Image (tube, rainbow, N blue to C red; front, side):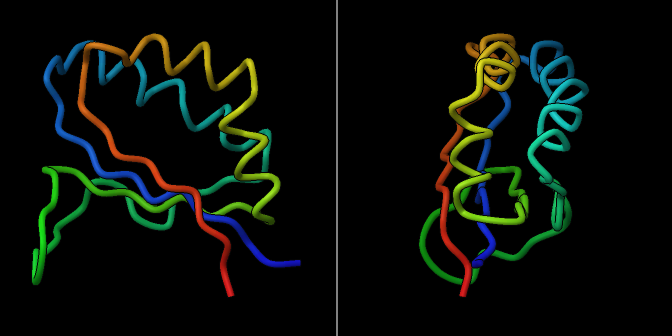
Length: 95
């Protein structure tokens, strides 16, 4: 079974909303086997465009990654973040 990944790029516009979202997200991800591989650390843009924060979250399967996104638990936490940041999130299947 191939792993699944969330690739997340974010620009924070309201730090208080974003902090609340960031504090609640790990518990939801863990329910689906998700774990951070990279979380808003140092980066170097070498080509194209980026945002100020970048994260990679690994799941045991592509289906688990999709199920987490679609879950009521994540959607409730996501509501907290709305208006607190601009995000690009892509869910991809690993090799």
